Length: 229
Image 1 (cartoon, rainbow, N blue to C red):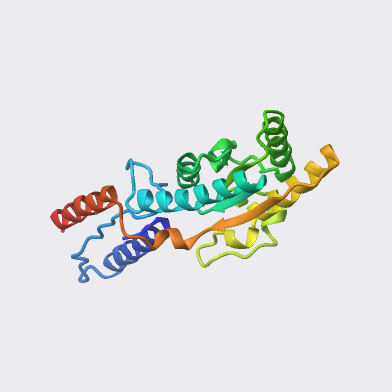
Image 2 (cartoon, rainbow, N blue to C red):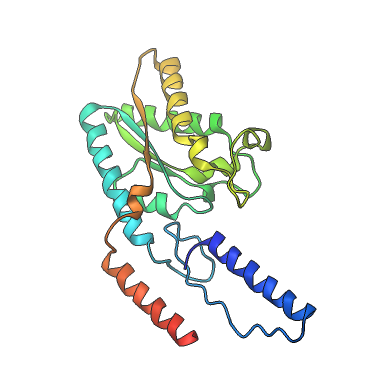
């Protein structure tokens, strides 16, 4: 039960067992591996929803909605970094739920195209200035942490990786970089200061009682796994 790395590990176990059979015909691998996809990122091909996604995305959305209300009262912007390595479903859903100004997700960029923080910040500052012209000097930008994977190889080479070779996204602090650049650009373009506050919504959204949908989906997957066994 788990995500990409869990499935990868299960596949390693299966492959090693098959090699043992090839080396020693007397060794029989009588088992099978049954995998139940679980990830709050909802980044699995071939299945519409993974369990945990709806619970975590709603929990994140409630936090971001609080930041939206704070931004409106204090006339500032919050730049919220949310979890999600390969997919932006979680970040996009939280932004929709919370009336986010814009969700910035990996799917918005072409595969293999380097992610440009400067270009993104220029795009976002234009949104900020446009909203101010309409009398709205506040907002929330939701940034998927997985955008760090789109950085140049030189930038990524300076960052830590986990045992599976994945970039440690928490160390990249994409949201903080964007917030600092927005503050700089705003002062450059207007001659005034404005607060762009970096925030991180992380593991706390995974520690929640399941939504009804997730509870029902989990039960269905459990029955399916039992039938396969």
